[in-house]
Amino acid sequence: MSINPVKGAIEVFLEIKKKLDELKRDDVESKLRARAREIPGMITDIGLIPTLSFCLAKAGVHNLALVFRWMSDDSKRSYNQNVSTIKPEELSYALFVYTTLKYLGRIKGLQFNIEDLKRLSRKDKNEEFISKLYEYLNILTQDNKAIIASKLLQQYLIQFKRLCEASFKPER
Figure 1 (cartoon, one colour):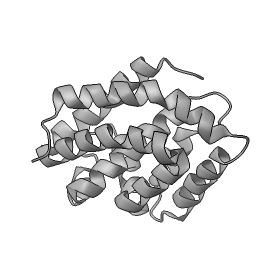
Figure 2 (tube, rainbow, N blue to C red):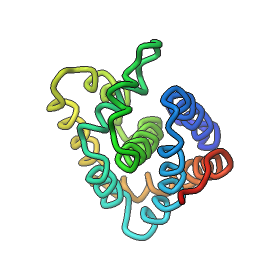
Figure 3 (tube, one colour):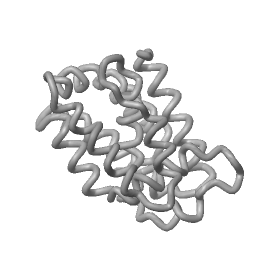
């Protein structure tokens, strides 16, 4: 299924904002605003796969799995306690990777299933989550899919950036 990039950006932004409001972490909001401003340019400059790899390194794969678990949990108890221990910088990168992968999962022909990552993130061990994540990154290396995905991501990420700029205070 393909989705309108503006609508998709609004949906994921509201989803993240709701979760961040539960955490009451303004420091994460300002960091996410900074990521939303800088990372789309990195994608243009160095490419999607190197940029996602950089973001994964900054976030930590374990933190990304926690974010997927947290974002997919609708109950009041959620995973706030675990996520609240993640440093703001790392959490902002993990949220940006989540944002990006969520949209990539909606692009026809990429064979990404974001629900697989959500399901695998709920397991006690992260090995399967990590394996599936790297499998999806590998898909991007085939048949110029990263170039096509980068183009399709542009409008989505620009809209996400605008929402972050309008809603979150800048870093100090």
